[in-house]
Length: 291
Length: 291
Image 1: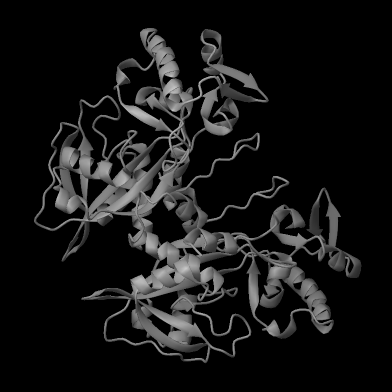
Image 2 (image 1 turned 120 degrees about the vertical axis):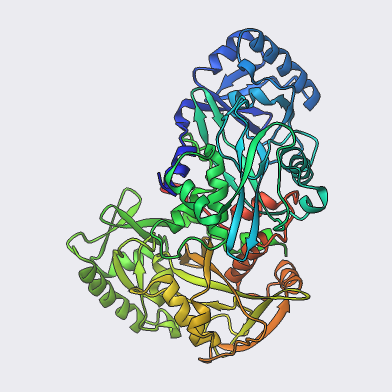
């Protein structure tokens, strides 16, 4: 592995297998060519024209869209889609998190509709006498996704109806027992974005990177069963583990590479410097020119 | 002004007025539709096919290309092009700085041929008891470009044949009397890129951002006449001056906005957060699809 290999691994999507779908004039997501017919054959929700899918314009409000699509998603679930991942957690449907959502959608369905997910990913670090250290959690072995893999110090998906920083403060408490007085000091310092494909599912996600400097005498611990254990690693060990292995959950590598860049661990004259820095923020231009 | 206004101001290029030019299979730069005929009418250096220009393939080595193009540039200079800006300073012609240059080109001609320029732009800052401060220079009133405007602490163009960090160390000594022992501690932490047009000239430049924490008892001073004066400003004053005015040289605003983001001065829930962060690294897709 190398840093660029992680970027490629996160950006494995074959975009020519997808077509965009729209709510009115706004692109809401992408449908895989093998999933779109499944949708189209079973509902009147989507119609296709000019190489794109359009949600029924009669669904004129976010609430109406949410309810109509939910009915269909429940049918899909009854037919065995989404496996054990259905969570009754509403994600906003919006290409930009700060815009008013076009509708809400159950989290488990989001990658099937190529809807962009958002979320805070925080690196908790400690400046010790002997150098920078990072708190590294291992995901619980009983988590449904990526069990036992290494993770960012605190990270979470972004539900509808709460701000990114407030959501991070909540996740800090739940996942790492970081008290609010510390968590409010976390700073949004970057984002990473990528286009990750898994069969018919597409994650064109954008994760906001936060840094939080933690005091030496603070030790995070798993508060909600999502984390198996925390360890404080010298930044060089994190650097080498990211660079040389796939021990971290795939997208967490990008957040850590962004941290390494911002904290000056790469050289300006590294032949890959610009490719790494730009690769962390992948753009979204489809073969059909819809960007 | 706002941060996004600065990004728009730096990215004012009307790309449909340009066509790319190639050396072999590699895109070297862009020619404006009003400048390309001037070139084509007076030399056999460039020929046009399929909406692109191609340097004479008989010029098979970088040295041959450099010499042949230089002959033409000297003619243009004799005819009044480049005004007082000719510096006898060779810039590398390459879309990626870390690749071997395709040829070298006099700095003054580079934007006429839409060749990407590179360079280090450093923010020198001080962590004082009362908060972060930035050393802000005012450009000499006798400089041929942007006289009297505010600038990044140290910044320079990138000539051929020297690394970015070594060039920065040299510029630190020349422009701000920062000793080598301090300058080597500067860290490459990001880049900004943009597509800036001025009539027939295009700057599709990429500047590497460096941070250097300076000790409280160090004071930079102008060593080579390029800087009129240095002042140490609280970061909030720099933030507001960038946000609200055009006092800084146009591209220096982007370097400072990148600094503000990385140092946590923006909120994750700022509706413009993602647009600002992605806008600092502009992509290069031409209307003809050549990206």
